[in-house]
Image (cartoon, rainbow, N blue to C red; front, side, top):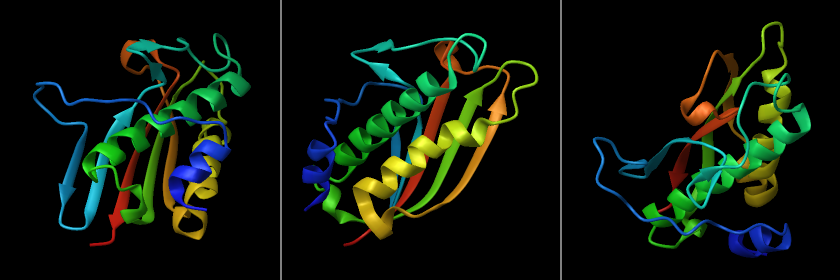
Length: 154
């Protein structure tokens, strides 16, 4: 099963993304390394949930939001590779940020959902180094943000 088939089999769909003028880009391709900027749990231009974990957004909902962030990351990887996600030879690093309520110290359990999804989609090549931290706030009052770095085959 290829990457796209695994995405479809999981009942997921890549977002349809287009580059917009901005002072930064959603991804940077440098040789065989692709860095995708932090992505929020946004669908059709709007956040699917807002607030801090767990006071406003449950841990389970935050985990679903982390999976949506991954799909947005993969959407930009799809754009960056000209529709050839099979070029991903490995997921090198994932950065996960969780907007947390005071006293919540389990941001890694939220970002585990992102890591699990990447490993499901890419298999062994999806195993990665990672940072998962709690933060005071994120853009659009999002509960989660995920970024990733990929190694690409030529």
